[in-house]
Image 1 (cartoon, helix red, strand yellow):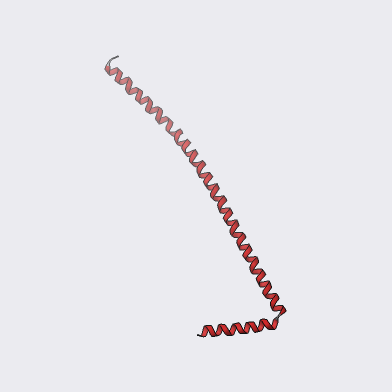
Image 2 (tube, rainbow, N blue to C red):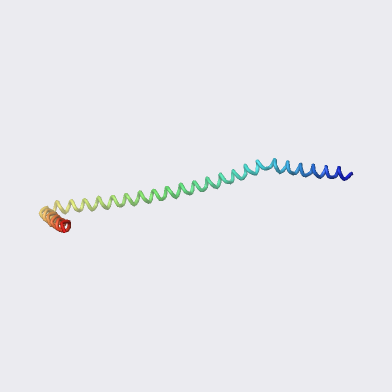
Length: 104
C-alpha cells in the first residue's frame, strides 16, 4: 500500500468515527433530556407535597385560632348575661380611662 493510499484509508477511518459519533448525539441528548425530565418531575412532586403540608398546617392553625376567639367571645357574652350591671360599669370605667389616656 502506498503512502497516499494509507493516508486516504486513515482519513476515511476518522470520517467514519466522526459520523458514528455524530449519529449518536441525538440519542445521547434524548437520554439526557429524559433523565432531566425525571429529576424535574420528582422535584416538582416533592415541592407540591411540601406546599400541601404547609397549607394544611396553616389551615389547622387558623381553624384553632378561630375556635379560640369564638370561645372567648362566648365566655364574654356569658359574663355579660350573668352580670349585666358589672358589664355596664366595666364599660364606663374602660371608656373613662381611654378618654383620659387619649386626651393627654
